[in-house]
Length: 104
Image (cartoon, rainbow, N blue to C red; front, side):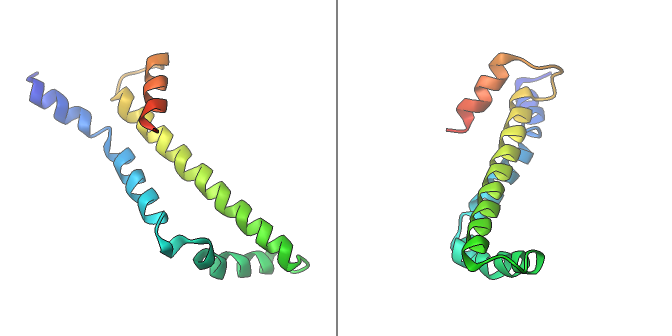
């Protein structure tokens, strides 16, 4: 297989990581700031937990946002690992280390 085609075929494994990185960038804008998300999340939390105080709702809102960060960066790590692995079977320590290094 020519070298150019080999690189092209490996690129397809990086597309999910690129898409997740774009989503992380979008979620990092002011449209998803805590002031903006509180307009949606706090009323939903209040509906689920009508007995919760304003302080409790605020703390839960922070928790929801932190879990969103964990989820999006977890998805990014998985998709980067997929890109590093590039369709090969199994698991290697070098792939995991490369995935960690890609995060920085």
